[in-house]
Length: 476
Image 1 (tube, rainbow, N blue to C red):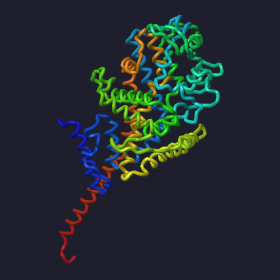
Image 2: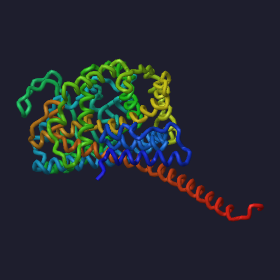
Image 3: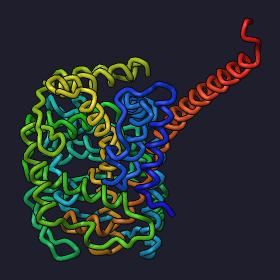
Image 4: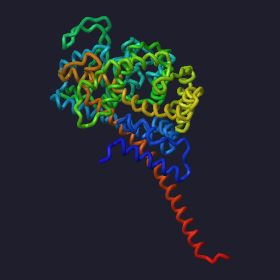
């Protein structure tokens, strides 16, 4: 049986042969020059190389626009179902509890640093670059439909007296939870830790609105909470993807190298889990790094800190883009903007950064191709990173407390304890993106096959014509 490397090589070889046959061979590559043949088990790498081999790399950019503008709602619905299913399985494996009267009365204390992994609560939604982290921002932060904005308003005492999530923001029919923040406190958690800065999650409003049913199942609370929270926003996701690829916004936000390093570690762990085979046991190696790997992550953090994009491992290209210009362009999208206008505005953002990045490149086509590949992969990662956001992490922390399980005290233990959830969500998102990409691949392949068929038919007709002419008298 042929190995995967040989199969991939044969596929690219066949495609290249077909393109030569129909005289469609601009910038053709040799089979072995596709990185996915030998350097990656990630199916997205392979699919992106298929686009390149089929001559449709430009289509990737339009697909990215389509996902960000037209398909986020459907992606969000599927991701939410995956989160619900994974948490439900998590609960059932640990004996499903009912929320007790004590839980309702006293609430659940969670250290702020455990919920806010990347210190997002230190970044104001009202800052010029707040659009990188939040959406639906106005002066009344507590009424935002972005749970992270609401969370910020509570932590930073900018909630105008409201600390209830649910009905107040018109995101759900009833109130779901109440948040309060204690700074410089001195309380002891269930696992013996002394807490100084912590969030208290109280669910009394939710249970009171359901007829004081203290036996209402935790699964129902989880479902209602997830339904009330918006995971993805097109403007927010666009700026985040651009920032992650080019690092043009982080320095203005004064993010520390340690924060960027932690973010890179989280992304590396998520990438490992998403590419793990279903029958492979997840061990500690998925959550740890060798000295060489750690040094590479540190280098990436240092480059991002100064706004530099690494290309081909050794060359670096500085990219200077004014954050005000970028956010002004994307900020023109609102509820009155048509889908066509939204697509154009999002595309303008990407065109601006891609053109700036390729301006000084000697091989603009290859460099642009590499950037578009990175943008597609970063889309998948940015969608997945919702898991590490306060809006999802808060729910996971509540469930861990109510189940009486060991509470994670660092990022590695968090991922280790929640590996099934994270793996399920990351694979769900990757499957959605792959499905969208494959639909376009099939169209491109069908077009190439049709052209090949036409070319073969034309050659056959020419042969028949020559044969018929050979049968005629010479003087005719």
